[in-house]
Length: 235
View 1 (cartoon, rainbow, N blue to C red):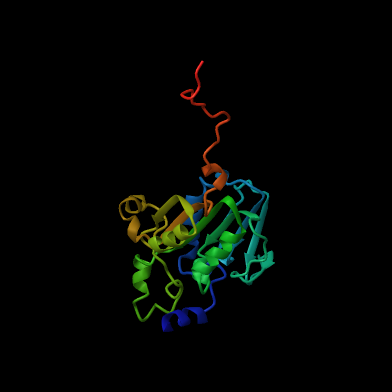
View 2 (view 1 turned 90 degrees about the horizontal axis):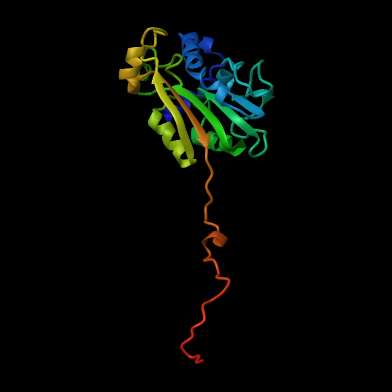
């Protein structure tokens, strides 16, 4: 609890430039997102969190792209992330680029995002991997109070567990950027060492299933005509 409280005392970063090598992280995320922008469709795309607003989404064809956050000049909607001012099932795509580290209760925040996301809508999440060189930096007394080590970090399996509880289908997941100080030329390391990569990217879709089966579908269809026994009839 003391560790979590120390995280929350420090405000969440409002720009990638506040991270050492932050522009490199943003560049890597944008590179991995390029094949996915044409696949998103709908009317409303929400970029939730300050770091999400700085990701270039011009290749996405969704017409209405809205920046949502608790503060910042680029925000079009200022709101508490745990109580988003949108109606249920009103957004087609929600982008959470390193937003889980900026909220006190990530799972509660994911449930709020799930509320406003339409059925079969897209959810994109990026975050720092706790099992990486950045995660090791959180153990060093000299740098653990600096960015990005002061931010909460999660393993990819933990985020996948949260999405599984909310019944999301994982369409794509990848770990990349194994060495924090590199932003190019490490493709072989990304292939062979994805578990210890500094950045994780998860693309999921909201799937809905009925809590109970329809009784009408389970009902045995009635026969229009019942067979009549001819044993008691004599001609």
